[in-house]
Length: 275
Image (spheres, rainbow, N blue to C red):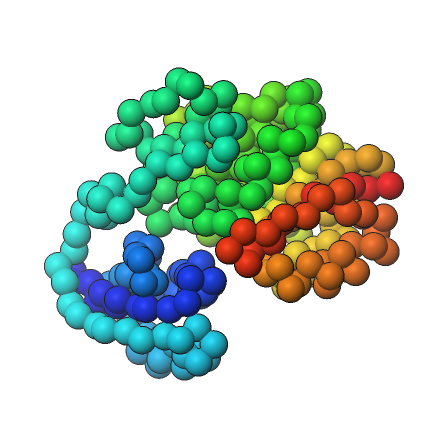
């Protein structure tokens, strides 16, 4: 089966958004590049009309240009191995793939084989979430990771001493990939499949992690609050720095107050606490 390859040049802040959107219309593999992303879809399952409509909707805002070609089916593991470099979050944690050498000088190490799932630590949102996790006491805590992707934040919670960790994602590929990464890092839990309303996790959780996007966070804010006890923490990312005020305004009616905010490459992250 042949694959269609699209080399998409775009603004950096739209890379992850486009990956998420393209995954929804049948694309099953992605590589981030210096200029944007390479996206791949099976030729037999490609929906030209939906693709053209999606690209048109982001064309101007993301400054998209693209080229298209046909390629034989490839070994995706080999492709991402060529393009996946390890990263360090300060001196807290070293995130690497299984084919990279370990670095024992770091306090923690996470092994992530990302395949096509989201969350390798390279994106500014994941980087900031990991950093903020390192600033909170997880010892003996109950932690929920909403929209877990590769499972990297759930794994970080486990390494930081959480008593129990629950995680889920709406994408079955992410669930399979996340469970593989849990096994690589000694995390015994299994990732659930579905939205937060479908999975229906049962609180209280001492820490809730949600690195998704602005609209989902706004829609689910009340649910996060219900899952937290007084003094519980909510860590958010997946939105731009200019959206911080909207998130804080939405959180206020549910007793969620700002503890800390940060931004990197115009992507923002928040630590909120329920009072």
